[in-house]
Each structure stands twice: as C-alpha cells, then as structure tokens.
Image (cartoon, rainbow, N blue to C red; front, side, top):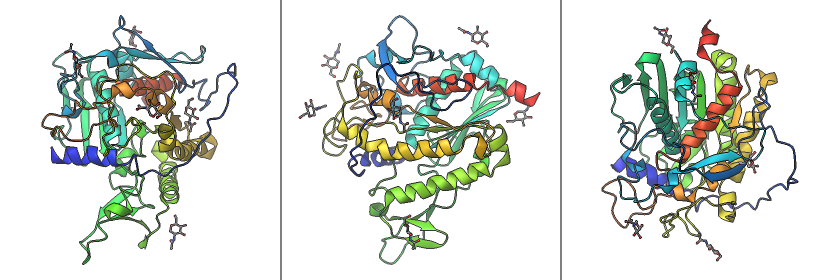
Length: 403
Ligand SMILES: *[C@@H]1O[C@H](CO)[C@@H](O)[C@H](O)[C@H]1NC(C)=O
Ligand SMILES: *[C@@H]1O[C@H](CO)[C@@H](O)[C@H](O)[C@H]1NC(C)=O
Ligand SMILES: *[C@@H]1O[C@H](CO)[C@@H](O)[C@H](O)[C@H]1NC(C)=O
Ligand SMILES: *[C@@H]1O[C@H](CO)[C@@H](O)[C@H](O)[C@H]1NC(C)=O
Ligand SMILES: *[C@@H]1O[C@H](CO)[C@@H](O)[C@H](O)[C@H]1NC(C)=O
Ligand SMILES: *[C@@H]1O[C@H](CO)[C@@H](O)[C@H](O)[C@H]1NC(C)=O
C-alpha cells in the first residue's frame, strides 16, 4: 500500500509545480476541414469532439471485478455510488473521422504472436490495465491469461507481462515515469543528492521495449521541480551532474534520447507501431492536490475545456512530445509513422472520471483526493479505443507481418 500511496502522491504533486505558461489556443474556423495530424493511411484526428451520453449501448465491456485492476481504480467498490461516468462515448468532431468501436476479438486476432508494450508512469499503468480488461472481456472465461514470470499484479516496480496464452500475445507494462534512466545513488554525506536522472540514457529494460510490435510511451507528470531537484533527483548527461533547474530543457534532452534510441533500433523502426500518448490532465478544481483540490461529486463531462490551469499544466509537455513524434515520420527512418495519441482535450473534459474521494481501501479519510488517475472501466478505455482506431487504419496485423 505504501508504494501505491507514494506513486499516487508523486503524481499528485505535479500539479502546482508546473511552470506557468499562458497559451493561446489556435483559432480554427469552425468549418475547417478535418485536420489529419498524423497523415497515416487517411488516419483521423480523434482529438477533438464531444462526449455523448450513451446509456443503452454497452460502453463498458468489463467490470470492476476483473482481476487485472488495481484497487485504487475500482471506484465503486471503494464507495462511489453512481456509475454515470461510464455512460459516455466519445464522438470526434469531424464526421469523416469515424472512431471504430473497440472490437476486442479483432484486436486479439490482429495481435496474435505479438507484444503490446506500455511504458511510462502510473497513468500509463492505468491505460495498460484498461487494455488488459478490454481484451480479456473477449476471451472465454477461464481462458489462460497469466503473468509470464508469476509476478503478482500488486507489484508496482519494474515490469509485468500478461500473456494471453491462446493468442501467444503479451500485453506488458514497464514502469519508467521519465522514460529515461533513473539511478539511485549511494547516500551522500549531506543527503542532498539521491538519484541521477540520466537524460542521455534509456532504462535497462528498454532492450525489451525495442522488440514490441505496438509500443505506447507516456510521460509528463514527473517533469516538474518537485519530482526532480526538490526531491534530490538531479539531471546528468554523461557522468556529469548538471544542477540546472531548467526542466523544459532537460525534458527536451530526454525526448531526444528516446527518439535516437527508437530510430537506431532496427526492429522497432522497421516493424513497430510507436505511439506517444499525450498528457492526461488532472482536475483539482481551482485548487491543488495538497490544498484540498477536489473532483468528488462531478456527474457530467464538461462541454468545453475552460480551465486555464488545465491548459498550462500540459501545453509545453504536449508541444514537445508531439514535435518528437512528428520528427519521426517515415522519411527519418521509421517505417511507420510515430503517432502522437492526442487524448488531452478529450480527457480534460472528464473531471467526473477520477477516483476522487473513492480511493483504494485503507486510504486515510484526510488523504488528498485522487483527481489524476482514472476509474476503470472509464476514460482510459477511450484512449485504447483511439489507439485501436489508429492501428486499424494503419493495417496493423501480426498475421500479415509474419507471413
Ligand atoms: C491536441 O488536440 C487538441 C484538440 O484537437 C488540440 O487543441 C491541441 O492543439 C492538440 N495538441 C497538440 C500538441 O497537437
Ligand atoms: C451517493 O453519494 C452522494 C455523496 O457522494 C450522496 O449525496 C447521495 O445521497 C448518494 N446516493 C445514494 C443513492 O446513495
Ligand atoms: C469483431 O471482429 C471479429 C473478428 O475480426 C468479427 O468476426 C466480428 O464481426 C467483429 N464484430 C463487430 C461487432 O464488428
Ligand atoms: C509466440 O510469439 C513470439 C513473439 O512474441 C514468437 O517468437 C514465438 O515464435 C511465438 N510462438 C508460437 C508458438 O507461435
Ligand atoms: C546543463 O543543462 C542545461 C539544460 O539542458 C544546458 O543548457 C547546460 O548547457 C548544461 N550544462 C552543462 C555544464 O552541461
Ligand atoms: C473556479 O473559480 C471560478 C472563478 O472564481 C468559478 O467561477 C468556478 O466555478 C471555480 N471552479 C471550480 C471547479 O471550483
């Protein structure tokens, strides 16, 4: 439980630490043609649109009782008494951009003998768990789904690899909140320096990401002063410490490292489908996580994203991530386009989808609310649905690759 708390707390800490940038949303004429962000096989821009209430359709295919869910995401078991947050589907703005329903049998067939790998922070884990459940909903009860090395799902360090034996498919999660390597250091005499964030080195287990067929990277919530310098985590390049507090420069450097790594991995650049998931906004109202920020008792999605804070929180992070994805287009050596999976606007509207006060059992009653992570089933299901839409439009099919 402690690790879990630490994780949640760390993510929560981000909010008030991020630097303030005032961004101007670009003004698009209302009748502008669909913007195709990635230009992949006519792939669509799912990023803009609205939430539509949908109580008749089975918008959720799995339940909170699925064994792959962290206790902290089981909001109703934790006391939330309304399931309204599950009764919404995402409708992209542009009519020509149809967001296909997530067809789990289809996804399983396409992924046969493959590896789907999620890498990132605890919100990446949130998405990984959603994917596991969505896929598991389509396999016969009692079908064999097991952690490859027998590790318990309660483990929050290192990695977990869930194998769908009937499909020889593994769906994996690697914890790497900053995407680059973080080394714990021997204690210094004054205890000031605890870890080195190695901006020019990918984590050791990156060797395993490289052979993924679908690789979904995410980062963002840890790139702030609190999680770095103020917690004794300093940046290094080579063997030199760099006491810069320029988080943005450090972030840019780390993304360059990830990009170079991806481009120099022949298998990934030839065969892999690479996604950079955008920032997942939090909702602490007008407050911060540690000053009583709350998202409890929100019943409906917002219709427009109005919060200045929400915009500030992620705009520079998204700008950098999307520019890295863009710079990895085919002509730069990737066989497939890297996709910037832009879930930020969609997600920013869903202040009703967080665990809020209904956090994992045994959370002290005076603990801050969790308005960063997501109840499951819930919002991350739609991220996976969008990813599925992209994969389908790119013709992802392990069978045709292996033939
Ligand atoms: C993400 O999508 C939203 C909604 O379409 C858009 O306003 C925003 O500019 C996009 N972000 C980036 C970095 O492209
Ligand atoms: C549900 O919980 C809210 C508090 O979050 C309470 O006001 C409401 O009465 C409860 N409704 C039911 C049907 O128990
Ligand atoms: C889902 O995919 C399977 C396998 O490709 C197909 O047989 C089935 O008709 C699809 N279901 C829907 C509802 O599209
Ligand atoms: C299972 O998938 C792996 C790739 O993840 C592949 O190397 C192996 O040959 C597959 N096994 C079978 C029996 O097809
Ligand atoms: C420290 O990092 C900053 C930001 O990345 C960079 O501008 C600066 O040149 C670095 N200094 C040294 C000594 O490496
Ligand atoms: C935030 O503050 C504004 C202006 O004071 C107010 O109109 C709005 O309702 C507040 N939002 C929340 C979620 O408390």
